[in-house]
Length: 479
Image (cartoon, rainbow, N blue to C red; front, side, top):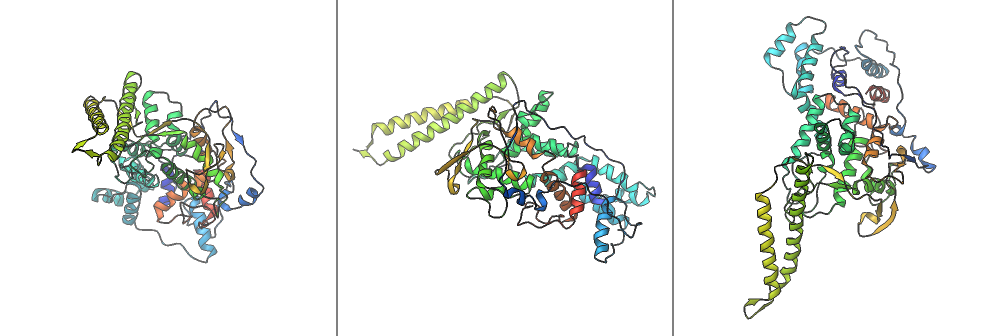
């Protein structure tokens, strides 16, 4: 389980235990009635691969003993001081109060303290003066804006599509607001991850909660588009790349065309994940070729939801039809007899004009139904390997599942869904040693400018080892 990082941020920023602030209650993993997880027996060389530090199980670390017992104010300080003493170094002196309030304010809300806030802190002689400042900052809405921004950078958030026309997506801001609100509400990190991978599939006590979870899957929907059409394989590659680097700290996408050259990630593992996302329906943002957004998820139920789905489908069908008719008409433009276009050219032109009129009529009567740039369940199927990454050169079918070095779970044969729900569980399983380590390292990085692991997106063989492995595991275990 992972606790919400708000008070944990305080520990990292200040290395002080105040006993104040709020903690989120870690949610239990959601178990699917269809999720009979099967663990594939990994090849024998996976045993050797798991000796790499990042694949080792999290270890409960005892607080290190130090010579200068008066300096530490929290267990974190013991780990830092022990390393310094091992190098025969002494810690820097304490920062002045005016410096300290500037550091903590910039760290937690991204803004400088006001003159009044500085004065109040300088004149507060109580032992809990700093704790009161931290509590105030954690309650500020600017806290979620500051720290939500860090996650949005990891999630490569943008409110445009990323294709050649970089089509605007105003609805994407709902995901941005979800992230900010999640930090401000102390949402546990494991719940945060599960909602972004499979929020539409998680149970929800109210419609409002369900719609929030649907919006959370905007994490997947904002994956980059690479053409004005509806080609999806590179969008899925972007999804896998971000889940791999952002959540697991692994360059999984390197296995798209061949087995990973440095880490224990074969091509089959890449396509085990690919099948999960290929079985997912991504909202289409629109573009130069097909103008209209498609498959945005209605934030409504009943007739209103059905109305929006029909509306989007009708516009999408007209887009495709007009595109096809234009392609048929284009070669006929030069076939002119006696100064007149041939009959087929005129027939196609009339059909295009009629379809464009229908399109304008539909747009004029667009349903006023709120919608999310999100994902949903598509047609479930295992994926075939794309030989050398080429989707036109197919290889063996690979069962949908997880990375073998992290357990190699696969979907049961009875599973009819995409597998996103199970993937969300595998990512946040306490036995998975990477998810907590990666996020703890990111939090440390954004407080101190450099992570304990200085390659935050790569915990694999080509990344750097942690400077303080005992501290990293201590924090990840607490997290």
